[in-house]
Structures are given as C-alpha cells and as structure tokens.
Length: 229
Image (cartoon, rainbow, N blue to C red; front, top):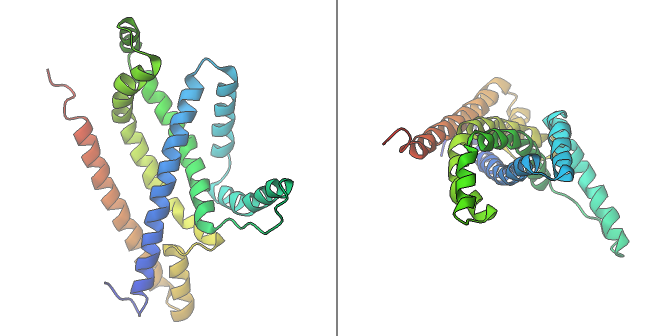
C-alpha cells in the first residue's frame, strides 16, 4: 500500500468509501431513472406530471444543495413521521445514506432522460409485433425493449457515472470519510496542501480511467452483434 507522510492507509480507506458511495448511488439512480423514463412515456397523466416535476426540480438544484437538504431534512421528516406513531427517540440519517439518496436522485433525474431517448429510439414496430404474437406488455419490455434499451443508453449512462464519481466529493461536507475528507485531514495535520490535493486528484483520475475502460468494454460487448448479418 502506498504511503504519503503516513496517510496512505487513510487515503486508501477514503477511496473504498468513495467507491461504495458511487456504486450504491448508481444502483439507486438506475432504478429511479428507469422508473422516471417509463412514467414520462406512459399514458398516465399523473405519472407523467410526477416524472416531469422530479427531473425538473432535481436538475435545477445544485448537487451540493441536494446533499445538504437530504442530510439535514431527512432527519426532520423521519422524526416527524415517527412522532405520529409515538416514537420520540432521535433519528439520525448518516452521511453515507444521505449521500446515496442525494446522488442517486441526481443521477436518476439525468438518467431518466437518457432512458427516455433510448426507448424512443427503438422501432415501435417491434412492440407491435410482440403484441401481435400474444406477448404481454411486461414480457415485451423485458424480452424486446430492455436488451436494446441497455445497449442504446450505455454511452450516456457511462458519462453520467463519471460525473457521479466526481460528485461523491460533495458528500464530504456532511462528514463522510471519503477521499476528500481524508485529504483535508492530512492537509490540516501536515500543512502540505499541494502534495495531498495532487494525491487526491491522482486517485480520482485513476478511478475515472478504470471506469472508462470498463464502460468501453461493456459498450463493445453490447454492440458485438450490431451490423452483422
């Protein structure tokens, strides 16, 4: 393990927290994005209105504010709900949970537009053919739409994940022991800001390169049959 003025292990621990936060937020964001896209394209006016409001509000608020609102607001909301059932103990939402929710909401808002564009790019004739042979709408979605949806949306989702990976640094403001908080602790102790901020930049760059290689591999894998007769 690398060692920088004795803080190598701390930076490594922060890196693991950053990776866990990014992956958990990605999972939540994919679910929200897919739900948002299907709601936006549905025939239900209420579902469309909710999806439109969600994407408009979340995309219109800076990610840092979203983190702060979720971190400080979730505790108030949960305690208000719990008090209705006679529970008076203090409920605290940790920085990791708040970060996952905030970044997941943000990723989902942008991902919903990526998914919506991908769904609209799939020829409607394929769905009509599925209905003609007796397939249910749910089966059409999983057997026809979903495999193509993933392939078409992957480039856009990959770019969003790279942004998400860097946005994890915002959660350090509420006390999450990620790369940035560990870096600030090291700077405070050693008084060497340039060294440690450059180390943090190198870690983020390394994570980004690894993510780009994996995304490129997935794109190549999902497009291996495209264009072949």
